[in-house]
Image 1 (cartoon, rainbow, N blue to C red):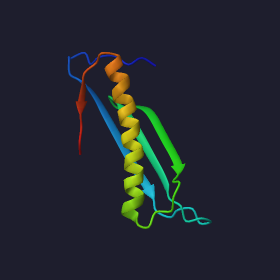
Image 2: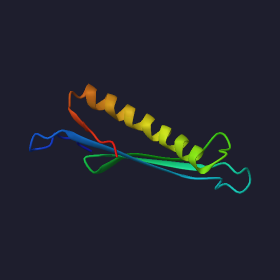
Image 3: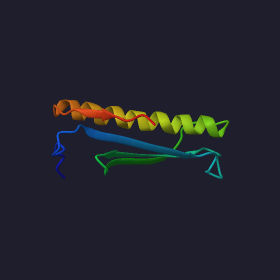
Image 4: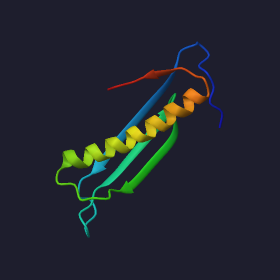
Length: 92
């Protein structure tokens, strides 16, 4: 896999999507969360796991999932900085 600069000189685009399934595990009522990380539209990282604690609400399980996605984004940002590339921060 090669990560290249955009040919038009524009910065790289990093996008992270997260979701959680509140109390999705029937046995222990723990939530399942997922995070997808894209760099210039190419999937570079994904994770899906059971949350460690039982979430008391949908909002709480979504926050835990978003925090996991943010950790992935920070790791990618550090990698991109080491490669001396510029990045466009997308907050939606």
